[in-house]
Image 1 (cartoon, helix red, strand yellow):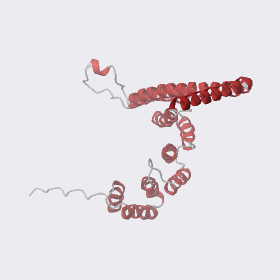
Image 2: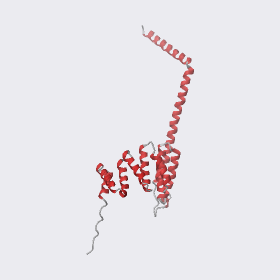
Image 3: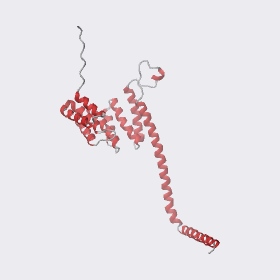
Image 4: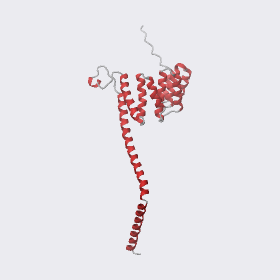
Amino acid sequence: MDTQTRHALKQDSFVQATSSSIGWMQAHRSNILRIAIPSAVALIAIIAGVAVYNQRSEAADIALGKALTTNSSTLRQAGMPEALAASTFASSADRAKAANQQFVETADHYGWLPAGKNALYFAGITYIEMGQTANAEKDLKKTAESSDSNLSSLGKLALAGLYRKTNRNSEAIDLYKQLITKPTNTVPAATAQLQLAGLYETIKPEEAKKIYAEVKDKDKTGAAGQIAAAKLNGPAPAPARATRH
């Protein structure tokens, strides 16, 4: 068989296959459309959903960033130039109030996004600074229940601190023990142990010493170990006053 004949046969096969495919598609056109159209609609919906999520996520990050900037802004100092003083706060309470409003708004608008969940945590923290313990407890409890273990542990640690501040030691102790049992990157076990030992200093001093000793042994060169060692050694003695002769 020569080359020209072989080429002609290939062309005939291609034409036949194409014709057969076109014929099959025409015969099953309704079935194809029934499958293809929903798939195309679903794909468009997915693309649109991703675009909306990214847009909302970016807006949430910007809102959280503004609130964090407010929360860390400089306090007004005596003799500060007016140009600088205009963008500062007279007190930490005023700053916390302004930041809290931004955190609450971010949490309300973007609560389903990571930035919104972080904003809820900071709303609880600023409520503590404002002395609004009921609101602080409400927001920190929600944070403590987060599916994000790192964020949840931060919420528990702050909530335990609030309970200590309001003389609810048994609840604080329970939270510290939870954090020790299940440490995270944001709240290592040693951090929770130091807080628990600090609480025990006045009510169970011997237990506090045991915890400090354990932390010291486990973290000999780390910051937690050094803090524990300092607690065990007690405050440095005051220097002797020189006497005049």
